[in-house]
Length: 284
Image (cartoon, rainbow, N blue to C red):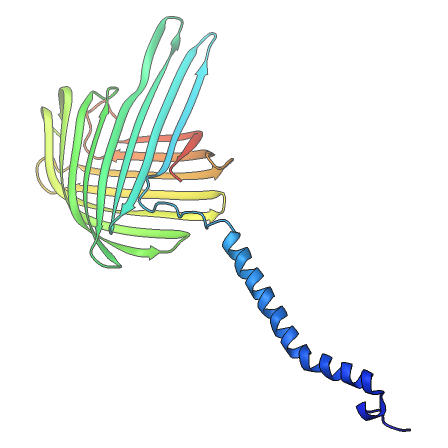
């Protein structure tokens, strides 16, 4: 079998083939350049990326729970609590507030079973990646136990034991000053007075974990041991489980327990509350 070459083709056909072969590389290069230019134009025409979320914005939740009954007996209970925080310039500021009012009775006879409010403000300042300093101010009142006002100021140091995107754990310790004022003189620990105060040590931890994309668990435990004055010992535990229903709304189950070692003769040391409510997300 004879091999077919350009020399065996007619002159005009061989000339056309040679011209096509000579222009083929240039045509392919021009095609590649056109495709690259079209791609650049497409990228330029695409919308700009969305702006990032402000890392210094306030974030948190506000939860409200309400219950009411009517008939032979009447009960009303309302609790609203807020927990927000903001991180900015190597520091974190946390604000909390709580209002709890409840009444029960028969007919027109009503008794107040809960009438308290509480608020705290704390600022943490990072010293390095693992340690931080904090300053804390808290205040609370409870008309049921004749507590007019209790304030607590504390400063100290803490450590980030866990600092992950989905989980965090901080422990802290410091010195604190606690002052308590009642509406009427109270007999506490063999001493009758309207004002009590002490200086002591504050210890505690704060933990949070994103259990799933829609479930958040938070817990805070703090204990105060008075070293002088009335030498009171205070313990507070709060824990909450938040389940997102929508982007802004969530169902929240919260547990709180407060303990005081020095109370009036007709009062209990523990104050336990379990609430369920609807939370509204604050922030981006």
